[in-house]
Image (cartoon, rainbow, N blue to C red; front, side, top):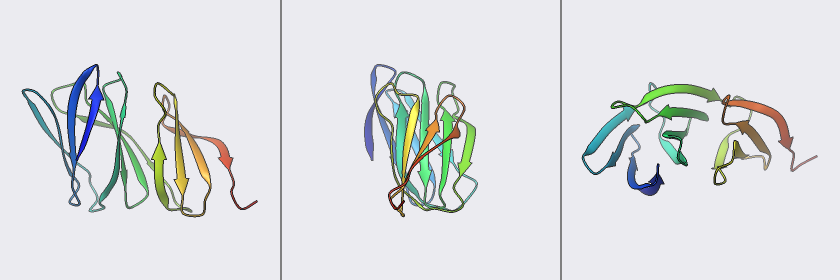
Length: 124
């Protein structure tokens, strides 16, 4: 369970191992579901953007638009060569930092939801 700030008001977000999410604030209860059976390892809100990023155990990142009545899946990004361990999205940043099992850090541009090409290599 995650309690986060979303568009200036408190928000509650749940993730389960079955890929069903509940996103809610007073008077709102939405369910979001991924196509795969992978579990959710992390949820990240884009502050004041009306968007949510889900990080799944199948090494996929999903960007959801939560501004409408029903959340829409906007982009999906799949990592093929490295396993995602953790993600960090600094406050009001356009860069998402993705830490991998090998100790490397990849950078994703939030506006395009594409890898920037910039990698911090731990083992080089």
